[in-house]
Amino acid sequence: MSIDVAHASVPQEPANAPGRAEMPVEGRAGADAVSGSNGYISWGARSDVGLVRGHNEDSFLLRTPLFVVSDGMGGHAAGEVASSIAVETVGDRAPGTADDVLLGAAVEAANASVIAAAEAGVGKPGMGCTATAVLIEKNKMAVAHVGDSRAYVLRHGTLVRVTHDHSYVEELVDSGQITADEARTHPSRSIITRALGSDPDMYADHFSLEVEMGDRVILCSDGLSSMVPDSEIEALAVSSATPQQAADNLVAAALTAGGADNVTVVVVDVLNDGLAEAARKHLLRRAAGVTGIVVAVAALVFAVALMFVRSEWYLGVNDGTVGLYRGIQGEILGIPLYELVGTSAVELSSLPASVQDQLEDGIRVRDEAAGREAIDAYHRQIEAEIAQAEQVAQTTRSETEGDIAPEESSSGDTASGGATSGEGAADAGQDGGE
Image 1 (cartoon, rainbow, N blue to C red):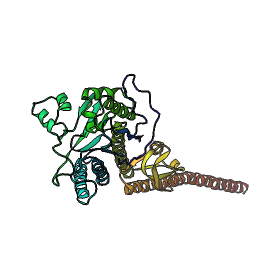
Image 2: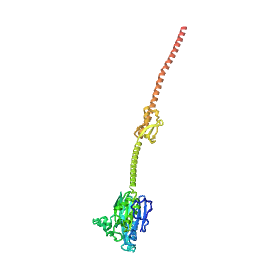
Image 3: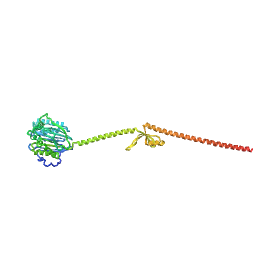
Image 4: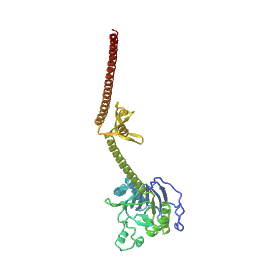
């Protein structure tokens, strides 16, 4: 018996469904039971020598996510050797992913190893075995198969056999000569048409299929399928709460039915097929994509807006004077959308009230040059107004001085006239005295 166990444990299991396990399987000599689980699958396995055979030629391998069942042929010290070599070789050569081609190649390599061992004197000449291997990777299961060991999938209470027996009676069933129930008791049921250890050119059936959360995968040697009909296997698989309980119940059913052969059962439950995680990652990728698009659009809008803002110029108020600004008046989230580019000595108070009001709101100009030209125009306007005011003042002063000058001349003449009169009067006085 060859067993390679990863993360093996013995969990506390629910009680069996009543009336199912007629024959107890615990504590039997020559029996092996292993169970375990991880985040994606849980498993349980049991192998029993049966009630007729003196030794167990079956081997099984649990090397998650790889599971293998092999039924040895060739008698004592041969069948168990062949099956042990087969499961070890498959375990060593199996791929790390659910690639059925590579898994089939691993089974074919096991065939070569069994043949080579017999030629080297290990075991016995003519020894051989079956091999049924599955590798479960999230929602994909690779299958490779040779012989009459089987793989089943239980989904939603319905059991489906996914492998095809390489046996004489299976050919009879395929041709319609006998039924599946008759094949279980047919006298030629032990004739295998393809097995490991006999033909160097042997090839393995291999294929992949999808599994989903809640599926139960069952691997077994013909010690189960030849003793228990598929309908009962289905009923036991459905009623068993855990993989280990299912394996125990199926082995017990085979023993109750007579246990004419070694019986090995490996049961694997799919706990997480990764689809929910894949969907979550897909949503995250879509969200990231949408976010990226939104960010890109926002960046584009921002860039366009920035280009627009930087292309705008206006004249505005800068501490009581006229300033030249680049951008537009206003703020976003406290960030100003403008910058002061040029200052001037043009006092706001020197401009007309209407212009002052316009400057308070901002007077848009074409570009920087146009803005500076407008400021120069304000300078020229103010200078012209100052010059005009000085001229008016000067004219006013000149007119005022012109009005005053004639009055002063008229007074002088009067005084002079008075004096003359006085003189005349004096003269007249003098003349009168004479």
